[in-house]
Length: 298
Image 1 (cartoon, helix red, strand yellow):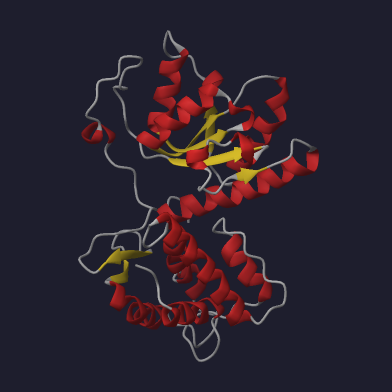
Image 2: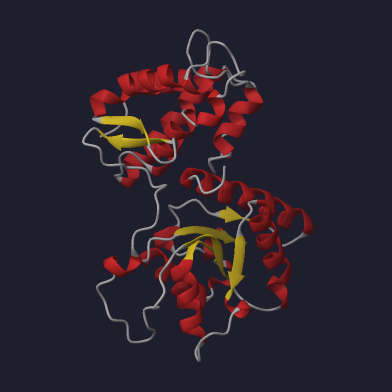
């Protein structure tokens, strides 16, 4: 299944926010910010706004078809961001209307048995199927104890599995060559108002693998650096994926990313001053998008 042309046209109009729609208007720079803030590399360079937004959605839609996923994570993120309540604050425009915007979006999504609903607790608009099942990937982590059905031999399942939503676990190669990279990641965490820990920040168990597993268990987000094809990082990434963590991959070379993961969006960086500054900015944006989707930070 895919979103048809008419639906993409309508959602493109919603993103641009042209009169008389109840959605906020977006200029060229705001269109770029809208997509890049979601970790999507679409830059508006003066093209006709609605046509450009539609082409971006077509590209997102086509990638989802190749992956056999509907709706894709990217499309879910776009639809929910269009209805981010921050854009509908009083004073933006007399024509901006949150309830009317949701109604228009749901008319478009109805034929796909999807709808946007406002979560009672957070007040955040989320995409769900019409039967009430939320399809968004931005949801609270499951209860790990209930989900685990295996008895690992190399490490133990931690006694405490309470998720620390403001904690980022950093999995990366050690050594002087990566000290500045580590600092860039920590700066991104600080900018996103998140705590961060690496395996060498803790010593609670007799084996380092147990400390690493404990850290991954309690962290909500895991940043992994694939640079150098480090086998430890690969192993730790597998644990993080199995536990349903938000894994944010970075690398100095896309060739270092395992083939099975190359379909995922990866932040590529250069280990010089300018490249690390860019890494900090892009990683900050990604972390903020994840936390905003969860409404942990308002």
